[in-house]
Amino acid sequence: MSGLMDVLGAALGGDMEQQLGQKIGASPEATGSAIQAALPMLLSGLMQNAQQPGGAAALHNALDRDHDGSLLDNLGGLLGGQMGGRAADGNGILGHVLGDRREVAETSVARASGLDAGQAAQLMVTLAPLVMSVLGRVQRSRNLDSNGLATMLETEHANVAQRQPDLMSLATQLLDRNRDGSALDDVMKGLGGLLGGR
Image (cartoon, rainbow, N blue to C red):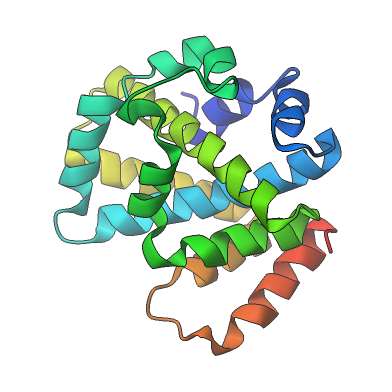
């Protein structure tokens, strides 16, 4: 059975990196590095949200209401900014998923890939509805309740951490809401070095 990141990888295959790069004004290579950094951030944020009291139920309801997976059938519309409504509201999604760690996450993606802050922010706004759409499709295909959704996110997080331990560890540290800001610069420098960014 395909995992969440496998489905995301398939959705971002083909010429999607090039199209995303054109949308944000970056090379496919820099865009690819940014995606590598951004997806673990979003997955970590989703998992941490699902672990909060009532978080899994709220996420489950949001997926049921706004993210049925149909966005995956019209990625051109997403890239062209033609998708309206809450399903494609990347800013709103990032606000819920990352909360007060959003700026930290965007800065780390920029440093990891060499994008500027505006490009990194635009990339994450575009990726967020895609991630939610994939999550909604997986939830429906597996008929997951809120507990099953939370377990699936934990399992997916563990799988990615096994394949990319340094990257996922850094993403998790960046989004830890109990972490004070004093060490964040060192963590972000580590992420940039890991992906060969600047």
